[in-house]
Image (tube, rainbow, N blue to C red; front, side):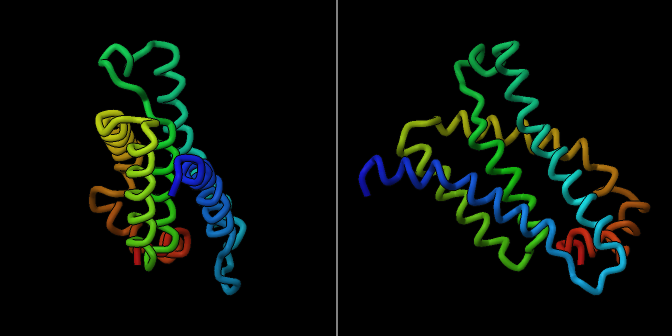
Length: 161
């Protein structure tokens, strides 16, 4: 494939993921009594995750954190990582597909010279740490274990089944 074709594919990746995430978020088993509540909670979680990704972009633009380290904050990495992780929670049976698509996207970014390996890894690491801190109450502890096994949480994110 030529540079322009790969560029078009890379440009389409995040919008396509966003559309899939949106539809996966609003598709809730019609038998669920809390359908609107589940959709609302999913969209709030997605907003928080995207807020973290874009928040670091604004911090980097304001304080030049990555450039001071000779790096570039990769908004492409941050947003695609958030969307893929969210899809992994919503449609866990396709987790390998989502992960594979992300790896291919990272490879295309490297080939197209959008970002370096260090840019991608540093962005992903900072995002993982921040998301773990923000969502640790859901992931760690006795109360979290009960919450993850609750019917409501499983309805919101089938991954917890």
